[in-house]
Amino acid sequence: MLPSSYEYWKDLRQDRTAYKKKKDQIAHTVVELLNQRFPDISQQVEMVDVATPLTFERYTGNWKGSFEGWLLTPQNSFTVMKRMSQTLPGLKNFYMCGQWVEPGGGLPTSVMSASRLIKAICKQDGKKFRTKIY
Image (tube, rainbow, N blue to C red):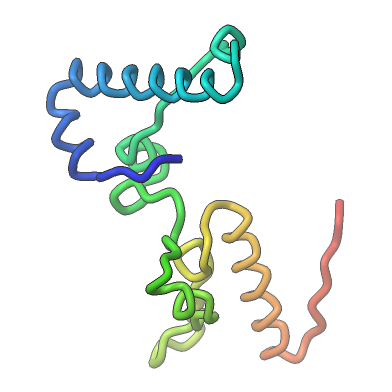
């Protein structure tokens, strides 16, 4: 993964040829850099796919193509690592779970968030939380 600018890719995609050319250039550069570290690895590469923020936006609908809910930085790591509330004041029976409620991102984080929420609802309802492995 390489840090990138959503705006850069959005502007570049106005010219589909330039967009594809830049993705091909990045693929080539990454393979060549890997080849410096692992000699002859380029001979073993069968397929390369460069996903830009626009790719993630197209497939997931996430804001500006983000692939994770939170970007941990030295400035926000303490704040983000605290548990967010999964409810909102004034909204009865409204709950939130997913990658935008937990630090990290992706499917595993969303599943952990859902599990935490169900445990809280079970506790609130006085029921025992049980899991079942199929």
